[in-house]
Each structure stands twice: as C-alpha cells, then as structure tokens.
Amino acid sequence: MDLDDYRREAEAFSEALSREHYLHLAGHKPTLDIEPIYAAHGALFEPGAVRSLRELAGREAPHEELRRRRLLLHFAVDGLIGEATKAEVAEAANLEAELMVEAGGETLPYRQVPVVQANESDGGRRAELEEARNRLVTERFDPLALATLERSHAICRELGWSSYAEAYAELRGIDLVALAVETESFLARTEHAYEEVVGSELRTTGLPQFGELRRSDLPRFFRATHLDPPFPSDRLVASLTKTLRGMGIDLEAQRNVTLDTEPRPSKSPRAFCSTPQVPGEVYLVVAPIGGRDDYAALFHEAGHTEHYANTEASLAFEFRLLGDNSVTESFAFLLEHLVDEPRWLRSMAAVDDPEVIVAHGKARRLLMLRRYAAKLAYELDLHAPAPRLEELPRRYASLLERATRARWPMASWLVDVDEGFYAACYLRAWALETYWRRALRERFGEDWFTSPAAGSWLREVWADGQRLDATELLAERLGEELRFDVLAEAYEEMV
Image (cartoon, rainbow, N blue to C red; front, side, top):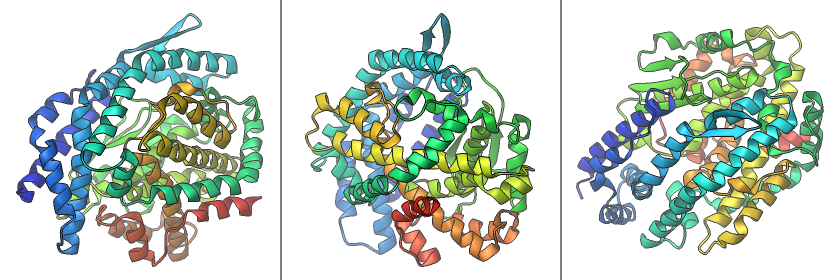
C-alpha cells in the first residue's frame, strides 16, 4: 500500500463529504447525496485496504508515523462502515428533511419538532409532538438504524475484533469500560446535587418536577425563555464577534471562515461547524430560534471553528482533520461556558445580576453530563459482543430515566446513539475544558476572554490541531493528568 497516495485520496474524500453535509444541513440542497462520493473513492474502504492499514498500524515505526497510521486506520474503519451503510444514512437524512409530523391538527417539519417544543409553554402539547415524532422514529427510522447497527457490528467482527465496542476502544485509544466506571461514580456522587441544582431550575422555569418531568419537556428547559432579555437574536453574532475581538481574534477578517446566518426552510435548527478544508475552508452555520440556547450553541460551534481555522496548515492530513475529537469538543465547551460566566455576562451582555443565568447554566450542564454518562453505559451494552436486542429498548429508557429523572421513551433506543462512541469524546471534553478554563484564569485573570494574550495562547494550542489526544495534550501543555472526577468535585462543592 502506498500510504502517501492513500492519504491524498483520503483528504479529497473528507473534503467532498464534509462539503456535501454542509450544503444539505445548511439548507442549500434538499437531499444528502453521499453515495456518489463513496463511489468515487471506493478504493479507500475496500476490506483489503483496511486490513493492510491495521497491519501497518501494528508494525514498528517512528512515533509520529505510527500515530498517523493509527489515525488512518480509524478513518478507514469509519469509512468502510460508512460505505456499507451509506444508503441507510442518506435515506435517514433525507427523511429528516422531508417528513412532516402531524399532531393535534397541526403539521410541521420533522426537524422543527424540538424547536416548537422549546417555544411551547403547554406541556401536553410538547408531549403530543413527541409522541407523533416517536411514531415516525419507530416506523421510518428504526429499520434504517437497525440495518446500520447490524452491518457495523458485522464489519468489526470481520476485521478481527470481538465487537464494535472493542474496535472503537482501540481506534479511539480510550478505555471505554474504565471511563464508564468513572461516569457511574459521577452519577452516584452528583445525585444530591442533581436534586438540588436541577430541581431548583425546574421550579424556576415552571416545568414539571421530578416524577412528572418528561423528555419532551427538556427542549423547553434548555430554551429557558425566562432568560431571553439579555440574549436578543439581533445581538447574537455581534456578541460572538465582540468576544473574539477581545481575545485578539477578528472573526470578520478570517477569510478562511464563512459565517452562514441566512434563513432557509430546510436549514438545520442547530448551529454547526463544517470543515471541508482545515484550515482553509471552515463554515460556522447559525439558524437562530431565540434566547440563551442560541448563544450557547453559537459559541460552542465557534470553539470548533476557531480551533480548526487556526490549525497549522503544514500539519499532516491526519493531524488536521482526524484525531481525538475530545480535543476540539473541549474548545467548543470552553467558549460555550462563557455564556454562563458571570464576568462575561456583566461585561459582554450588560447583565447586572447574572446569578439566575449562572444557576441555569450549571443545571443545564449537569443534566447533559448525566445524560451522556447514561448514554455511554447504554452504548457499551448495545455494542457488546452479543447484544440482546429485544432487551435494549427498555434498558435504554431505564438508564436515561435514572440519570435525568425524566420519563424517557423507548422509541429512541436506536437513533439516540452517537457513531463510534462519540459520547466518550463529549465526556472527556467536558473534563478537559475545566483544565483549560482554570489555566486561562490563572495565567490571564478572571477576565481572560478580554485578553489578547489569552487569545494568543489559545491560538498556539489550536495550531497543533489534533496531533495529540486529550490526555497527551493536557500533559504537554499543562503538565496535568485528565481526571473525570474533577467534574463531580465541582458539583459537590456547590452543595
């Protein structure tokens, strides 16, 4: 195998696939046409090529070369699974864009259900929308998701792993079982904090209390309409631009970044970042729905955008576009956290008394942490060597209900799953972000987000792309060990 040729074609494939996802999700194209892209680059994902990469990844080689080979192997396995399931993935994406949900005499686009729930004050109406969407999930999406799951499992076994879980633990370089032990401890240690921190916010937002709370209420919880005044839609982009400028980063002058704010009927309701070329072509896409949640989503995706846009162009393809996504997610959470930072709220959003916003942010974060801890435990069951599929819908609902204290429908047991154990990246990123935030405060002061020196330091870290994984990067930059229990400690201190 000629690795240089493989790398060049892998980068071309990544560019084409990312651009196609951008065009579809940004509402420029009604359909997601990924099958022709896989067909044009089919040689990348032939089983023989993937096996050759696995063999090369196990051979002796200089450290950086070996690191690159392992990242290529991860890319190739993802691609082989993607190629084998491309029809189902494309059909599911197109259904999301095309399907209409009918509930209570109203018809609305499938992708707009969480947006409408977020702005709907009637809990019964939110639940009605959820039930209607769940029927579509069961009827239309589950058969596609099940076919994708079974084919993905089979491919991992055919390549020599005992299970999908074993494959992705090796490919990501993450001990998933050990992380699940840590997150289970987090759930136990934050039980009291969850009751107090999240329970208080449920009362503030006028939502049902634990025992009556439903998953359909959570979009409304995150929307937090009582926090709207400091977060007007017409200041959304300006607040980000001003914040980055304080750090010495001129968003408007970044020619490699396109800020897409135009409304389009089929545009994804969530902000997202797309990276056809890193660092040369990066998109930050926004579709505001209103309120604080818009700001959190935009700042999160801006963290990705700045990380990728500031990556050193001379780095190898693997270190620019591949690698441990715990790293880029940590920078996304770092900027997102500013929306709950008292000093940012006072100086950037002119909030005199930010404590109500801060309290909601802490509750929101804790709910998400516990939800993803439950997702990781569930996905280890789902992707075990011999999963008992008939038991998993109930297992899924039980784990999510225990973690969130919200009644959770079984219908999402196949669609509420992150590919390749991406949930583990989110969990590690939440932990890693706390180290970055602490270091920035210690080095540049509590108002680090107004310091060009802080921005320079971040750009220096961002320049390394994802050459190092989260553990390695933290050790190299701050000389610390990544521990998930720092998150539990923070919530224990609160109560």
